[in-house]
Amino acid sequence: MSAYRDEDPRIHDIKTRIRVVPNFPKPGIMFQDITTLLLNPKAFKDTIDLFVERYKGKNISVVAGIEARGFIFGPPIALAIGAKFVPLRKPRKLPGKVISEKYILEYGKDCLEMHVGAVKSGERALVVDDLIATGGTLCAAMNLLERAGAEVVECACVIELPDLKGPGAIEWQAIVCARGVPLIMADDAILL
Amino acid sequence: MFAAENGLKGDPRLQGISEAIRVVPHFPKPGIMFQDITTLLLDHKAFKDTVDIFVDRYRDMDISVVAGVEARGFMFGPAIALAIGAKFVPLRKPRKLPGKVISEAYELEYGTDCLEMHVGAVKPGERAIVIDDLVATGGTLSAAIRLLERSEAEVVECACVIGLREVKGQLRIAVNYRSLSMKMLRHRLT
Image (cartoon, rainbow over all chains, first blue to last red; front, side, top):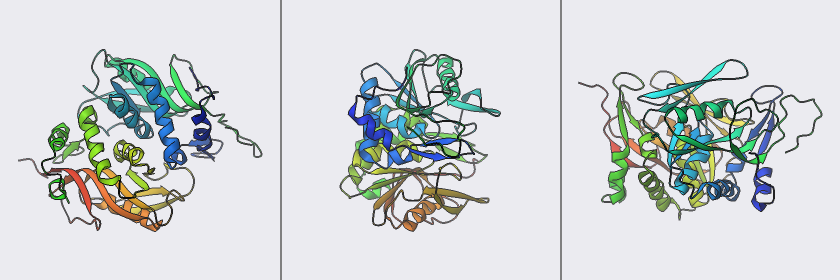
């Protein structure tokens, strides 16, 4: 249900390569930046390998990635486990017929879309994103897949923010558990 | 410039790749024949072949940076980077990357857009490739090249799955690009 146990020796290095950027995209948010992880080929490969080891051989035929950072981690996982990759996108980006799922943000609403016919009934699917916070986006992703008749086996995220989960039943697995605090005081230290 | 001209002619994988790409008429607006690579991503073998062809070409060229253009460049770039042992650098629309960035504006058919890269992602002297799903006029790729060159990297090549032969305006790109699938663009449906 939550982050991998720290015993795997690869996890420490992955954790240290995630950069925290304060006050992005707005004051008080400690942004978990995975782009620094992508700059280290070994740590990036280890991240993918951890997921592949978990999901290979489980008869998963769909890896769905959430725009845009889910597009960075999802395809390498899909390729390694023999699954198709399905991008879940913001409105009006996917050409042709789509199904849409709305979800609630802190302020306002957003929407995720998936191609009609990308997923067949009965397929086993993963959802991939860089980070899980409240789980709102992942829930919308799961709904899209379930509406197409797929079974969502798990949501795979690099980073978990442990304190923000909203209601809703999601099975997720994260590599790193980050203590991202939504509101910070000026002198707080950042702990990963 | 295109696969046939780069010695890939007759590679049995190319046909499967080309056939897996779907054309969607009148998207995003009337008259545009949109080249949709999402159907390629649904075909595991064709997707893997696409990545393998690029990896075969770049693995021995001492490339340490694979830069991918948001968002469809993100679908191909990381797998290539992982296979050749390079870092992956996302090139993004404005205000998506946190922290310090450099920006490069480029022209669209109507108006301008902007691409950003993190300061410090790329070091002087690094050899880089740029990945996107498709090259049309080369405007976006030119902006990507400029970002990398401003960081003093050397852009060895641009790699695109699809190259459009007939495009409005001139091809502005000054660097060799390789694309796997040559597609004809028709601006008007008759």
